[in-house]
Image (cartoon, rainbow over all chains, first blue to last red; front, side, top):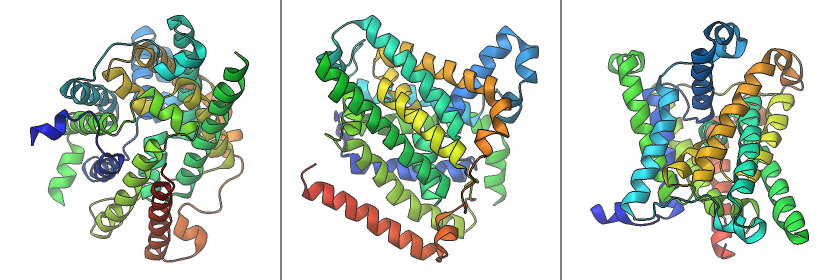
Length: 176
Length: 187
């Protein structure tokens, strides 16, 4: 039984089915969708409060999404721990700066990769909140609730993602 | 349903359960392959369909389960109104970041847990900056572009004017059919 937890990978169908159950469990236990980008808003708001409480508390967005340690906030530390446990049990945990696919085209520079990841992260966080959710909140939790907006948003995540990935790897990557 | 209300209303229970659900989520994302940059980027390059298989499986199972739970009063609908200005524009901005970073807000945290330092110091810090920038511009966007082009319906059954069960049957058949085609094509 413990063996399956040590497997390096499960079938994506099995892992996906588990995530489907978990998304429903979130709606039952917390009465809210299983989303990840809200946690970043709460964390950013808490950092903002630490630096300048007055300014953060007057910002409209943080009055709508209150920066506090709650269900939505705890999802992200949970995901870090869960992935750490999973990769440690299977012996695949390892520290790295540059993903191998990235290195095949853009080289082994950690600085370049870090700058790209930082810029990508900024767009990701900005876009997630602009759209009101991310891959898990819209893509999975919204879709299981038959939300029209969530299904359209998820399609746009992939449309934008495919377009930019193709530019990176099939255009810029070929020129480099 | 009193016990459920008690769980939802308890601050401490919510913190503990949120952490536990997050741990299970991170565990499943990692086992499913979705915390790996190469797997996600290859999905966007349409050379590996692991991410889509994972997501569609989650939706296939979750859609039926949610309908049952909602029917018996254990879950509520949280679908919100959408607009082209918010969902389409935001979705495309997100997509650009998704491809450049190679992770999404959940999988970036999962990747950090597997030791990917680009996810921890680049992706997670970047996402924190990104949401902060959005919070700063939110008042200017709220009644402008975010409200532009409202969608005609909140849910698919409303849009298609079909009973909920019929929409679920159609979507489930479409998703399962798509996965079968992927397997058949050897992708």
